[in-house]
Length: 489
Figure 1 (tube, rainbow, N blue to C red):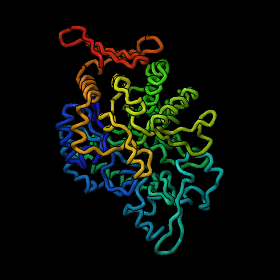
Figure 2 (tube, rainbow, N blue to C red):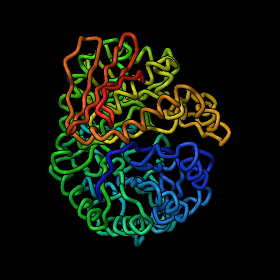
Figure 3 (tube, rainbow, N blue to C red):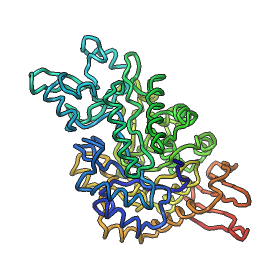
Figure 4 (cartoon, helix red, strand yellow):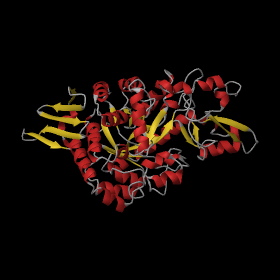
């Protein structure tokens, strides 16, 4: 299934009006004609936490959001992208609940990674754990089995709770692969066109490694999932937070990748007034990629920008974001921090707010994204130039909630009237409709405080010129009549 070279929307199933029916209404009215590339619906499945990323099952849609009929209704006009948390599932899933009752006697026991699958005697070795890229203080959680009273520890890469809400799946088990086949088949039957493999970099656990994107084993897993997806006409988008060389490897092997470098690099260029790092990056970035500036998690920093940032400049950018209301997440474990102990993993806050609520700066950032190589994704809060939702942060205790506001239909109707939002809509329509974006891309020579990007195909040509100091973006293009046209975005 070819991925369309048009702009996609990222949204939770309940964030634009309250449920999937409301989302479809908003897409057909306020957002009509904007997202011909598709809609990434963040997990609409029953879940026990992490706002959908601790799924109980992929066979059903959470009733509060709607049904598969509602997903298919959206899919009649938009390609649908959904997530599979291929690394883990909820501890409240029927599979793990059966394991909690019966332990190793459970029919689903082999889905999970008990510690003797890692260490022969089942006892964790701290020296091995110290080598790992950790997302929590220790990579396992301990549970008591109801039938026997036995305490069993299983691998849990993610989760702030102890024991974790997210239980890792064993990708070496035939049981896990049967579930994946069932889930992908259900997706195909309901019109899903693209699947994002969330947290796929963590699926291989191997002693003596970081347990993150372990080669060559990870390629066997990815290739097998790709064969499954290809057989059902589904495109795959592995979600891997890793330095640029690894993203290039993925792209070279025929996978779509995420451009997690672009968000911070654009932000840094606009905050410092220098486009040299941005221009250098755009000359070498993969083209088989999805681009974004903001998402449900945060603005990526490390490990995505490893080797691509000046740490003094990065600290300055982070401090500016914090002064503007952002919060940051930190890397766990000294081994994987940057030079001088720099440990920022992600910046939490809306992209509009980290740019100082400056309309011109924000439109310049979006123009750069839409001219960068790849399929652009626009997160729903960013689409509406949203500001940090501090009430949600206080209510949930999760810094990421600042960028996860749930809009009512009345709030959407008001937000789309804002001048900055209408300017963004115009940019999105231009990116969707102008034919040169299917052609050849150049980063043109420019002074250090400017960025100039160009696309050309046949007799059609468009060029973006951004003055990073003035925060201005101009687009020059050849129209249908062959005339040169210029407009300030």
